[in-house]
Length: 590
Image (tube, rainbow, N blue to C red; front, side, top):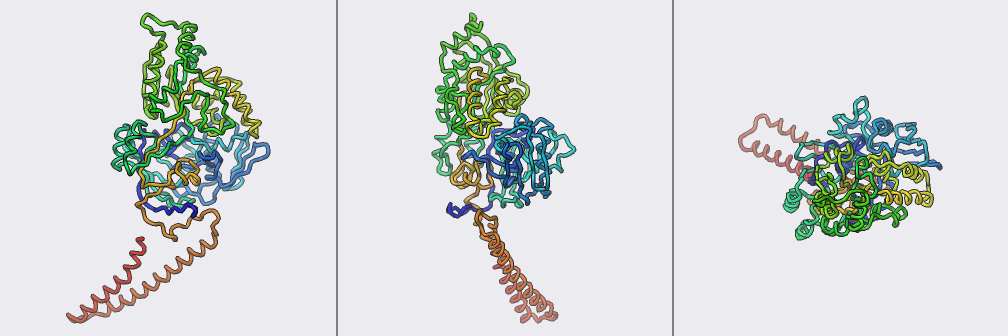
């Protein structure tokens, strides 16, 4: 850490992290993994994106070059990276990982299918050649859930979707997979050979606690130190009373919440019905009822928190709250109220976190007011993903996801082949505009395409955007260094990694242990200093060895001891040996 921060971290300790849902596997390349916080500790991408500045920052690639036409991207890899099994990571692993995503139409396939060729001129250089200009390519491969680099030697020749290492991950990241006790927890341990330096913590335990009340209790009692996703936002005021728990502020990752429609089913294929449902929703009242007024009502197509300002179109709005207009449109669509007051019934599917079940209940109330009868189905995320995203077995669904930071990333949700396009929305003009936005290099060239996309979505309403979510991150005060805390976010890049987290109860880090150089260090001087320290220790050990050998000889010479004098000599020699060894023992323990 920079000396200017005035922070001296400590080494050691175990961080216990609550997660409300258990992963089905850890490999994000082929399907949506529940939480990025799981896999970013063990796997790494070529580059990352800062949640703070939205800038592309190095990861496995320490630098890169881009051709003038933005069709050739050359990456220069760190040369001392190893997988957790000790195998060196090379350009061959990068090439195989991306080609496998394309071959198996993985999670980011729709945003990577224009990769024409991947070349590896040497072990530490990777060249991506694209079939078309793409100014967004760096942003795409740095996004949360973008492809990670997998160990080719463990995957090649297997079915990567069912490979056992998906559940026993071997990556290059700061923490190594240790164990998975299904139904209880999984544990990661510090990667002592991590190329950027060993993380401060010894272990991280991800503990499954689906019930918020249990989580809050364990947070208070110290059985959990931190949690992925907010506890119930109603609990924040209670947790603020605990002196050992920090509740300052909310993390705003650009997560948008929406109401989606299965466009292949009637009556949701009728724009009047979709617009009527939009008019039935009061996003401001919804915020108060479901999230206690702690997140952000969003009456626009896209959010304002997780995107650069230039990409946000303030004129692309959702239908305003107007129940009377909702009723009129439903009548016009040929869906009058029956004798029981019901126009039609619908199955509403949601998931368990982010107050989504409460969201569903409030929406049921709104739609009931205009004559739409709702049946709610709540699933844990793995099942929700199968029902909504993979199989589209729903009428109306609630959804949530990070759409930024670059507007091109919304193609994943609205492009015809986008993985998160659970609505089945297809618009050729929108697809062409996404291509146009990628082809533009300057903001002036790109902005019109993304503004027009938002206008079309506001007109056609494949879904209704309602809120921008904000995650509360209550945590124990004796653990520092989270990616969202100042000043750590400057170095962590806001990429959800936990390798900068440290425990106040840990051991002081001595200069000889802190050998990872910081930017601007004189590396040669650091190496000379370390070699000098090692030389001094070596001389001391050699001297001690000589003295022990001398004392051993004296002991062996006592072949005919007398009861008093030689016993006294023996005891004295033992005391002398112990006296010489103890200082070195305690020095090593520090």
